[in-house]
Structures are given as C-alpha cells and as structure tokens.
Image (cartoon, rainbow, N blue to C red; front, side, top):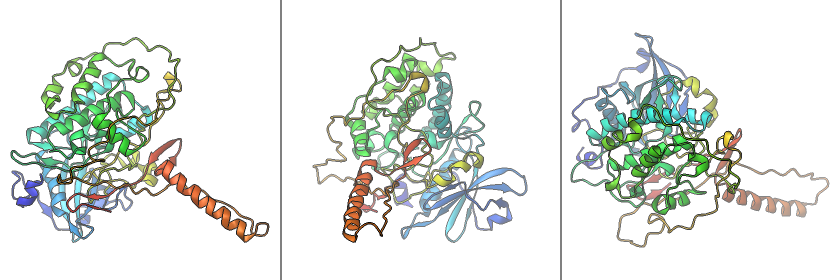
Amino acid sequence: MTNCHQQGFLSEANCPVKVTVRSDAIADHYIIEPRPFARGKFATVRRCVHKASGRDYAAKYIRKRRRASDVRHEIVHEALVLSLAETCPRVVGLKEVFETASEIVLILELASGGELQHVLDSEEFLPEATVVRLMNQILEAVRYLHQKNIAHLDIKPQNLLLTSAYPQGDILLCDFGISRVIGKGTEIREIVGTPDYVAPEILQYEPISLATDMWSLGVLAYVLLSGHSPFGGDTKQETFCNITNGSLDFPKYLFGQVSDAAKDFIRKLLVRDARKRLTVDESLAHPWLQQDNIPVVPPIEHVTEVPQSSSPLSTSSASSSDSCMESDSGESSESTGSPASNTENEAQSDRLFEEYPAIPPPLPKTPPPSLGIIHRDLSPRIVPRSPLLNSTNHNKQTSSIHINVTPRIRRQIVVDHHKVSSSTIERRTATVRQEVESVRMELDGLSINGKRLMFNDEILVDERVGIVY
C-alpha cells in the first residue's frame, strides 16, 4: 500500500473515504446490454438498467490483470477518486462497484449528452460565450480535485461529458484512471497524457504537479475556440518539440473573432515554467471568465494569402488513438455518455479507457467553412529537439517512446496470370510491397473515415520497467 501511495495512488488504507466492492452477481441488480458501446484492450462499457429504480447507468468492465501484472490497485484508485469527488456536481458519479474473479465493474452515471468531443466533431469550434460557460464548469471540477491534491492529467474533450444535448448540457469530468495524488515531499515522474494536451514538464520527465492540469486547460480553451491544436505537428515527435520549444500564436483566420481576453487567458496558462502558470483559482478569477456578455469582435477580413496546408485539430478522436504515451493499459476512453451518441462509432471503438494515457486528437479538419478554404503551412518547424527525444544525460532516469504503427491503408494489385509472366508478377509484387511500405511511412497509421483522416495506432509503454510493447 505504501508503494502505491508513493506513486500517487489512493488505496483502501490511506483514503479517507471507503468504497464497498460487492462480490455478488451484478446481473442480480442490473439488466446489462450485451453489446458494449465502447471497447478497449482491457475494458468494455455497456449500458445497464438498475432493476429496482429503472435508471440507466454505464457499466465499465475492467480487467484486473494486464500482461501478467495485477493492476487492481489502479482500478481501486480510480474508484476512490470518484468517491472523493462524490459531492462535486461537475464530476461523473460513481454508484457502486462490483468485482468478479477477473474484472472490476464500475457503475457510473450515464451522461445523455455524450462527449464534448462529439460536439466538436459536428461544430468544429464553439462560440466564445459557450466556451466561457463550459470552461467555468470545467475549472470548478478541477478546483475540487486540486483542493484534494489530485491532478487529473488527461483533461481533453473526450473526457468531458454533457448532462444533456448541446448546447444546453452541463459538464461532467470523467476518466480518472491516470490521475495522481500530488503529496508533499514526493515527486512523481511519469509519461502520461495525450500528445496535443501534454505539458512540457511531462515530456522532459520532470515532476508532475497540479499545474500540469493547467497547461492542458490552456490547450483545451484554444481547441474549443478554434478547432485547432496550438502545437500540433505532422508527427508526434514534432508535436513534442513544438510543446517544449515552439511558439504560441493566434492566427487571424482562426482567432480574428475571438476576444483579447480569451487570448490572454490562454497565454497565461500555456507558460512552460509550471510555477508561473495561473492556478485554478486565478483562472476562475480571470476577467475573461467573469464576463457575462462576450464583446462582439468585428468580422475578420478576407484572407487573400492562403497558407499551404492546415494543422487544425481534427475532433473525431473519441475513437482515434494516435497514442504517444500509454502505460500498460490500452484501455478505451470511458465514455459514460449515452450509447445513442456512440452507436455510429461502434466500428471505431478501439479506444483507451481513462485509467491510461493517450488518446490524442486525430488529424486536423479544415478551418470553418465561413473562412474559405484555408490551409496552414505544415512543413516541419525548425525547433530544437525535445529532451525526451534527444537525451544525452544517460544518468538521468528517462522514458522511452517507440512508435509502432499498423498501417490502415492497403494497396492491392490485380494480376491476370494468363497474360503476365511469373517474373513480371514477381517484379510487380516487389514494387507493390515497396509502395505499401512507403504508404506506411507517409501516412503513419492513418485511416479514412468518411471525409476525415484520423490516427488509429496505439503505443504501449511500461514506465516501471522501461519496456516498449
């Protein structure tokens, strides 16, 4: 138990609240839908109905063993965090917990509005007044956690649920599997989080703090207002370099109608020195979040000079997994949103649950149609290499990240064996193999989903033993 606590985990021994883990059959109390509406390597989420009350819930089944390791303490940690936040109206509710020989089942509040990510999928970006309302609610949830010295460490649209359909729904924060208790006198160094939202101190393997969440909130505000990632690159490595060394800018074609107060709020959160970022209380007191009416900004002028290509943040990442960082989890994002909003995504359900890091936003969408066809230059930025990627200090403990992408696009060749000689077939086959390898390298795991491209690869990293799976 002590070891768990040192790593930032709550345990049944050190937590002021208790969670009753039931061993009786869950089917005695709930009607469980057989088909999951979210699925991961080690967990599934099914809609269930409480027999006594008739209320709908989300039942999350999580395996207790992964790769021959017992991770029960990590699941219990998540349940304890949810219990600690029971009185916070901005955190998804935990009703009860069941345990079988191989799994732990969390019975969670079912948010009928689904994920905020789904709203971004359809809207691309949100009105500033709406963002102000939502950011206030998100900060309320984060303040509750920070008051208890808990860092969420994976704040992003996929982990924000809506209590009812947009735009009326209120925020519920979920996915606490990689959250950590930041105790006094202890240092936690882990590679956790999602590429576009991860703080620079994590990439540099420096101690995690409550301020790590504040960086993610700055990225979140930028994404909600523009639909783009502030540091997104062509590759995960480039994104990491941009986070640690790149500059923050607000392109006019994206932020021409966004207030200066909003930009100031983002700037004061996206500060690389964690000690200089706004705290959660300072953020809530920022003038941008205090105003009831957002000032009207004159429409931006027509953009005559079009950049080469765009680096917007594609927002269909509930099912994407351009995973750059993941402990030995591989679980799918705990979407406790209504299954109705997830049915169409069943085929994309290779997701990671909240206990474990890494569901990055997929590839970018084009900017809002009203702005015309705008493209941002995606040529590689000339920036120093991230310390994570180019470490020369072999004495310092670091984490390795290995990218192993399974290609989602296959090229096929049809050969008429009656008209082509065997030698010609062999030459063509070899050429096709080379082309396929080229596609693998160039597209880096992209798949075509409708009109959008998105990542579907998963990278698994075991930080404790330094093994890359």
